[in-house]
Length: 410
Image (tube, rainbow, N blue to C red; front, top):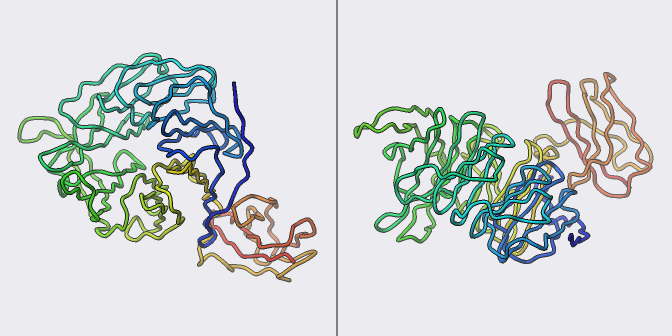
C-alpha cells in the first residue's frame, strides 16, 4: 500500500544563485541516508522505521507499510523495483517497496554500493560483505581487527572503504582498497596523524578527499582537517604485509565544522555537509570553503546523481535538492547584456554568436525555457509568457563555457 503526500518546493536559501531547495517531507524524524537511482526515483531513510520513496524528484513521497521499524543508516536503490535498507540487519525488496525480506543478519549496515546489477558491497558494524547474486545472499569478507567501516565506493575494478578503529583514548582512521578482488589495508604510517575519519570522496581510485577530526577521549573536538590522498602503491611493509602506501597533503587545517559527507565533482569543485546545518562549496580543491546553504538542522548525508544534480538529508526531516547546472558565480554574471532590462514584452540578448544553447531559469534553478543556439550576434526572445520576477539567462557556448546574466520581468 502506498501513502502519498503532495509536496510543494520551498526555497530556503539563495547564495549567489547557487540554489539549494528544501523539499517538504511528511516527517520530522532525523534522516541519515539517501539513494537516488536517477533524477526522479530515490529513497531516504531515518530513525524509527522512517523510509520515504519518491518517483518525481521529491515533489511527492510515499512510505512503505511493511518495512521494519528500525533506524535506517543505509539505503540503496539498485533500480525502482530493487531496493535495500540497512537497519538492525539488511533487508531487500524486489517489488518496489511493497514487501521486504531480511537477506543478511550482518549488524547495522552502514553503506551499500553496487558495481553492476549482480555485484555489490556492504559495510556494517560486523564487517564488510559482498554479494554476487543481486543481493539475495551476502558473504563476509575476512577482515581482522575491530575497525568499523562506514562508507564504500565502487569503481569498475576497485572498491574503497574507510572508517575508524577504537584505541586507548580515541579513534583513528582506517581504510581498505581492493586489488584484483583482494582487500588490503591502508598503511597506518601513511596517515599524517591519528585523527578520526569523518567523510571522504574518491573521484577516482587514486585520488581521495578526506575530512578528519581530532577526537578528544572519544568526543569530537573543534579541530577539523581536510586532506588529499594520492599516489597509491601496493607494497610490502616492514612486517612483510601487503598494504597500500599513499601520499597525503593537508589542504586546510581550519575547517569550521564537523563534516559528515563530501563529494568532489572534479579536482577543484567540491561540496560538503556539516553538523552545524550548513552545506559548503569549494572551487579551489578545498583550499577554501564557503557556505552554500545555511540551515539549523544537522546535515548527515549527500548524494550526487550526476555532475549536475544533488540531494542531501538531515535532521528534522530535512531533504535538500540542488541542480548544480544552474550555479551562477558572481564572476559569471553580466558576461553579456540584455535589453531592455527590465523587460515586459520582448528583449534582445547580445553576444550569442558562440551559443550552443540558451536557457531561461528561475532563481530556484527550474528550467523555464530552452532556446536553440545561434551563430548570430544577437537573438530576440519573447518574455510575454513570463511572470513578473527575476530570472537567469544562461548561455552554454560551443566550447562548454557558461555565461549568465540576470533578467527582470516587469
